[in-house]
Image 1 (cartoon, helix red, strand yellow):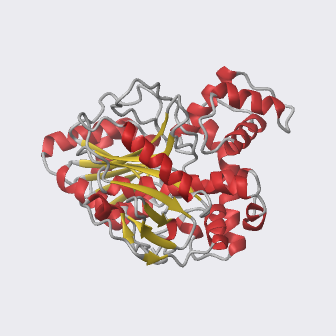
Image 2: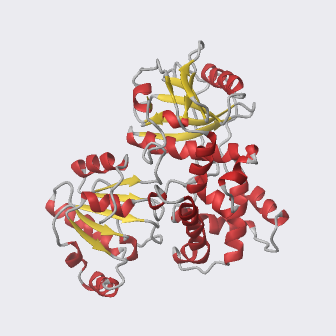
Length: 423
C-alpha cells in the first residue's frame, strides 16, 4: 500500500496471538484499520469485498471453500463474514495442520446467529480493534505508561502538550486512521460520512432487515445525547419521543436497532464492575452507553470543535468517551478490561481497569482541574469500600484529566493528563 503505515498497539497483540493460535479473528468497526494491520502481518490475502472477484469468491465458498484458503501463511481472509462457511473451513484446516499462525480473519460485522457450526474455541483467537488512541495518533506523548503503573512505578512527573482546543479537535475528528494527518475539513468529513453510511446502509445490511433511516438517525441522536451515562432503553425511548423528530419508536424496535448497532461495532458499551465489598451495597449493573469512538456522537450532532468548546458540559461527556476509548485500547494490550462502577449510595468510578491476573485500578475522568479534589475523594472512598480480604488492594487510583501536569498527590492519587498516557 502506498500510504505510510502508522504503527498500532494491536500489532503486538496480533503477533502474540499468531504465535499461540492457529487463527486470529480481528473484530471492530469499519475504517478502524483492521485490514491494513492484518495486511501488514500477512503473507497472502483474500479480500472478499473486491468488486472484481467477489462473485467468483462467493461461488467458490459455496462449492469448495478450501480453495480460498490456499496461499502463504499467515493468510488474510478479509471480511470473512460475507461467506460464513469460511469460519468452519478455517477451523477444520487449523485442526488438520495443527500449526500456529495459519490465518488472520477480519470482520466489521458479527454474522447472523447459527451462520457457523462451531465456535472455534481453542483454534481461533479473538481480538478487538478500535479506532486509534491518542498515543497511536501521536497526540499523547506517552510519558505515563499504564503497564508501568500496574507494575508499581507510581512516581510520575511530566507535562502534556495537548491543549484543550486540540482535545476538542481529537474528539470531533476521531481515531480513524484515514483522518490522521488530513486537513481539518477532510478529517471532520470522514466521521460524518461514517455516520451516514451506518444510517443508510450498514445497520440494515448486517441482519438483512430493512430499517427506517429516520428512526436510526433519531436513535443515534439519543445515544449521542446520553453518551457516557447509564441510560436505559426506556430513557432512550422517552428521549426520542421528546426530541426533534416525528418518529416514534417502540422499546422493542429500539432493542432490535441497538442489537444491529452492536453487531457492526458502532456502540461499545462499558459493562458494570462487581467487586467484593465490605458492606452490603446494591451495585448498578446497567452498562454505560458509549460509541466505539466519540466522533460518532459529534458527527451525529453535527458538532465542530468550536461548537464543542462552547458547551463544556457536553464536552465533559465526550471527553469521558475519548478517555474510555483510549483506556480500552491500552488495557487490552496488557491483558485487561475496562468496567465502570456505581452503587446505590451514588458512589461511582468512571472506569475500573481490571487485569486478568487480579490486579485492578480505579479511574475518575475529569476535563478540568476544579473537579480533581472531589474525584480523588471518591476514589479513596471506593478503595475503602472494597473488601481487600477477598480482592487485592488497587494497584493505583487515577484522575484522568484534560489538564497539563502528571503528578502524584500526597494522598497517593495520581493525576494524569490524557495527553501523557500510553499502554
